[in-house]
Length: 239
Image (cartoon, rainbow, N blue to C red; front, side):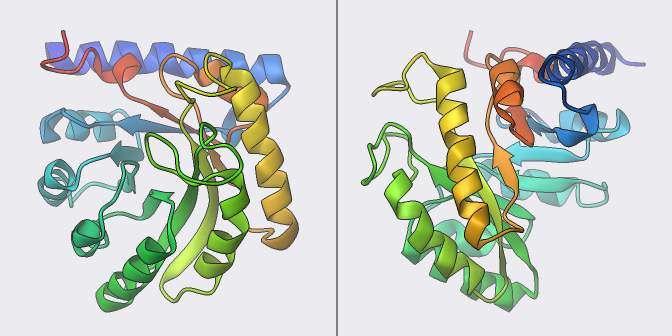
């Protein structure tokens, strides 16, 4: 085992232990939570190591980094999640490799994703990014739609060819009433998910929590956590 593989394996084991403990504390089964490893800024060789260690879900937030990496790892049994703010001019590329787009936050993006999914003859699961720093309406500082915008987007996604409404995603906000209150923020997302599932029962994905707050996300009921640094280490160039 190479030094890098040993490092990633040890980190991955620690994260698995954290998720398992958080599930136990919340009275949940470990199988209820899917780990997505965020591989942004890391090399395709790290993605290959993750696959060898049993990771099946990986995430990227920039198409210019993700597209070549996905191509280099196309032989691996991976599910690719796009989690960054997505511009419509990048949709054709993203639709070529991503099975999940977790950052849907406007009608124009739904239209573009549907068109490109149909063109590529693929189905893409879409999560609505909820901005809890946007009040009930408007957009968040890091993308996302306010809670009042969920219903309209959900209906658009549910009727869009080539797309599947997967559920909701959020990032713990840095400003507003939920700043520094990750568990409360994630509990709010769960309430919104419950309301969404009343009209769209299959939209049961709830993506929340990262390296620093995955326990709070699991406690709130998240089905997916997005972890980068805790598995792969401090990102290159970030100190």
